[in-house]
Amino acid sequence: MDLPSHVSPASIIETIAFQLTCSPVDKKVALHLDEEDELKHLRECFHIPKVTDLPPTNPTLVKEDENCIYLAGHSLGLQPKKIKTYLDEELDKWAKVGVHGHFSGKRPWALGDECIVELMAEIVGARNEEVALMNGLTVNLHLLMPTFYRHKILLEAKAFPSDHYAVESQLQFHGLDREKSMLMIQPRKGEETLRTEDILDIIEKEGDSIAVILFSGVQYYTGQLFDIPRITKAGQAKGCFVGFDLAHAVGNVELHLHEWGVDFACWCSYKYLNSGAGGLAELQLSPGINGFRLSNPSILMVCALHASLEIFAQTTMKCLRRKSMLLTGYLEYLIKHYYGKDKKYPEKPLIKLITPSHPEKRGCQLTLLFSVPIRDVFKELEKRGVAIKTVTTVIF
Image (cartoon, rainbow, N blue to C red; front, side, top):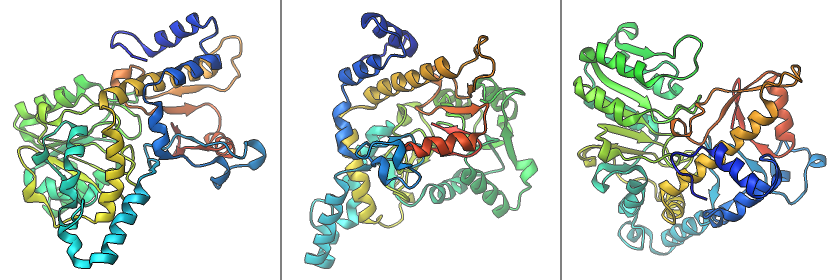
């Protein structure tokens, strides 16, 4: 079902419920949405674990043949079914032709990444010559930063830990003081997410001394989607190089890196791009990337990513994003209904959403704070075949 930009997910859910003459939280609404889902056939392209195969599941609480509820795509995506076929093809080629596999077959090993770079470029809105598939995300960050580095780096105070460590490593390598050269922006007191106006304000005030602005596309902890084009434009206006870690954004939200003029970006592929643990990472550089390429990547990693990108090619990021906004909004609606504040039952468990509530300002993740011990909630969900991840909060 279409999600017009001016209509909220809650309004759509309530409209459907009205048409079905039922409550918005009735299961009929979910069944109707499933039936009308134009992307439902893509579900069959993935292996979805059975509840009884997950180690924490309590068999007495689940049905034996049920699929699990998988809410951990921001950590590790599900396996595309074609991966095994593509891996077997390359292993068979190696067995049969040996060294000749470097320049033969549909995925010549020496050029394997070039066989799928167009599929990858389409997802991030870049030109083929701006994208390279290589290494891991943090390695690529280390390759990129010395190119743009002068003195001061602006990043989120709660950036993904490996990004934070990479920046600190660059400062140490250049013999610079962390306190003076690492400018970190935090949310306002009492708030969980950064305001765009505060980001732009610090760029305006400090931009003349900042060499590199490094932000997430989607913040890994809060799920906030940053305004990439505005941050890019503001930073470049002050002479800064502007780059983004898109690990939690690629395959999650629409990206237009070439149009936005982003100086550089890097991302991994094992989360929303489903290429498997430790999968191939990618980087983007405008105007060109070839000078950064290091040899050819493992063809086995290329196979895994190839299988996933072919699934993305069956639709568009616009369609995926439309479904994502409705699906995430539906979950938010249910959480607020069952676990929002209720004057009649002040003692009931509460859930607070720290992810921005506006669909345009978040990806497909909801980060939740619980009024009850989080470990207990986590264990009970796992017992019932729900695959999730928690730190101090459960992140759906």
